Picture 1 (tube, rainbow, N blue to C red):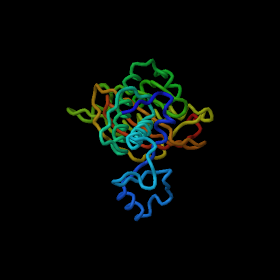
Picture 2 (picture 1 turned 30 degrees about the vertical axis):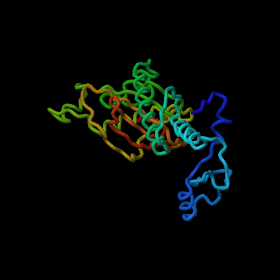
Picture 3 (picture 1 turned 60 degrees about the horizontal axis):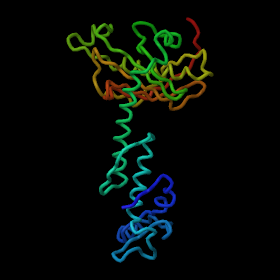
Picture 4 (picture 1 turned 135 degrees about the horizontal axis):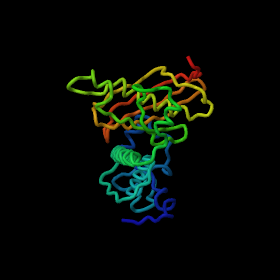
Length: 263
């Protein structure tokens, strides 16, 4: 075992090199892989120890595994606090852990957002969107991160008019209206661009649309919109809708930005 303090990364972990067993290295070379690597970059280990090389630490291989784990978990993009026990770890296992942590982090952040004061209430939303009842499908915007991401909610109740016909006895929110709610949040996000003042976001195309989970009366749709690309006349937004921790729908939506002239 070894202890690594806050200031020891450069001296105790960073020098630990990638390693491979002798047969693995031969197989890679036979496929033309790793031909540019030298003993300074990688350890090739035989039954007798490193070939034409020597360990920088007695447990250099274990230190490199720790280095791999730290690097892979850094991709989560969130501060982590806890104890990790890695048994026969590798990049694939590390990535599975990172994806699970990211999923749980997203659930926690969404739960926190629901209890925040609204960034935009319904009155301010109506100043941005031209939609009105029964087609205004964003009740509140919880958070706007500049012009890159927005989070909002749509409260789904049995009083929503579409439940009268979709379907009697088995009320399910139409998928097209879930997509419309996501698109409206995307339009709010695009309106944050100053150069788009006086512009209206009109639906241009939809791609990768998937309905994942039914939405019924009593549910609260948590909507997320992330700007992928915004130009002077077009915008591309990636949207998701959640019910609690379940993904209900997702879509890539493109808009055309037109002058908001009265008819």
